[in-house]
Amino acid sequence: MTAHLIDGTAIANQVKEEVQTAVAQMQAEHGYTPGLATVLVGEDPASATYVRMKQRTCEKLGIRSIGHVLPADASQAEVITLVASLNADPAINGILVQLPLPKHIDEEAVLNTIDLEKDVDGFHPVNIGRLAMKGRDPLFIPCTPYGCMVLLERSGINTNGAEAVIVGRSNIVGLPMAMLLQKANATVTICHSRTKDLAEHIRRADIVVAAIGWANMITGDMIKPGAAVIDVGINRVDDPSDKRGYKLVGDVDFDSAKEVAGAITPVPGGVGPMTIAMLMKNTLHAAEIALAKK
Image 1 (tube, one colour):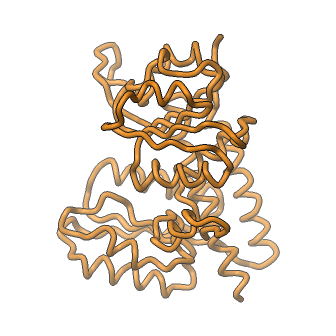
Image 2: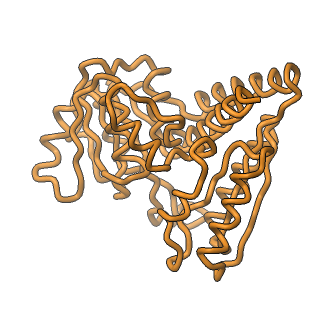
């Protein structure tokens, strides 16, 4: 059996087209354009690349993008002052502070400063708290877990009553993913690097979400036949045959897993494109919240 390939690029393009259509309608009917502010502290090349990708996507979809760059030695007070000014700016609907921040800055203090209704990354404690509570919904869902849920939904994978195993317990992916799957009526197990007999847990799973940051950790012999595998990991491994000297792989050994799984995301081209697409969707939602108050 060869698994169905879950094409994250194609599904992300669907989401972006939907956002673009809704933005154009908002502009035509209300004369209102959503605005996303990005805050980059320092000159980390990877962070700068991610910010540029987000800004380019905004431009393509008709969303106003405003970039702010602070030096690496900017103080925590300077970052918080900038965020506070963006909170007060009615032209800004979403605020994205690119992580990680320099070590001398308290990330939690900065993220807590973001207005709840502009928290398009979905990391504000109130949004996470609402996500964790039964019967309550956050204003915004963290983008990568949100994208994973959309991949499952649009691939026809039923979560109702499913056994779901999440490998990884980060605040960005693993924990919010567990909350979302639980809300979708899955029975959820969270595993991590210290879980005993990890393979045994994974073999029970109808849905596996790999988000532990360990290249090719999960192999085909650990996967239940027919399971859906969502690989969030992205890792560099040496590859002399590639002109870059490396290749990107996930936390799942794709070649062995695809022979057992029922559906699987590739790396790259699986979860990655969904993260930016869901950021755009969250920014549109933030604009809808602001417009409803006018």
